[in-house]
Length: 323
Image (cartoon, rainbow, N blue to C red; front, top):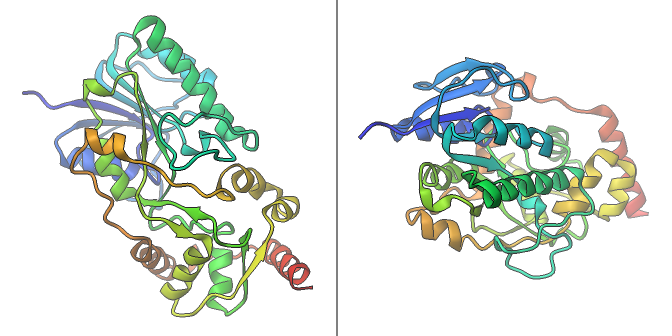
């Protein structure tokens, strides 16, 4: 039997780098189309590389599977449908679990939970892109598979808003800001765990026309997340709670992701992906992931970028909350 051929548009990002490495390890004949190599991650050994732009695809051959990791607008999906019709047996679209209804009306979240997000344009664009694929499948049998990751990270990705600036505050014994009252539940998935589930979807005809959520089953409060980073840094976390709406007013770039996703408790039901990929179990708990991230940042001082302006804003939020 010949190897499964796959084209990844992207393939060296936070999530896709782990998927690419595992796909090659499992014998997939993988081609990566991207604009260059991400300097924070090594090149994917064993994969073929093509330089190109997802928005202006070069001439490509036929592939058993095409995965677009770099598609955010419905107009781009429309171009992909036109381009890849007849060229692939499976087109996998990377959507987002943030597309699920916010506020969440019922937990756990399943693939049948309504898609609606009035807070975040990113999520609405993902929903519109899914609509294009569903219509193409229903009208012409376009072989679409939709995957909805939630918050997936690797060693380079700090999951607290503010990134290293917040971790630096922890390291220096300064208080950090956590939205709400810190008790909302969140799910974090290590990219290597996500990869095991995702690779199990590739080339499987049962996935056509279907959507799948892929997350871990670990539930953490945001206070616990901050505390696990502090523990990895060898300290304890001093946490100051600030309402999400207040943070959004002071730091507008955080607003959509907070109000449209992180401020809400999310519990995901992974039964559908586990039924299709029976050996999928997330095995990297966040306490290990937090240590991995901290070690990576501490290993190279150039990675430890502190935003002075953000620090001043956080100090102001903390002072106002305490007063």
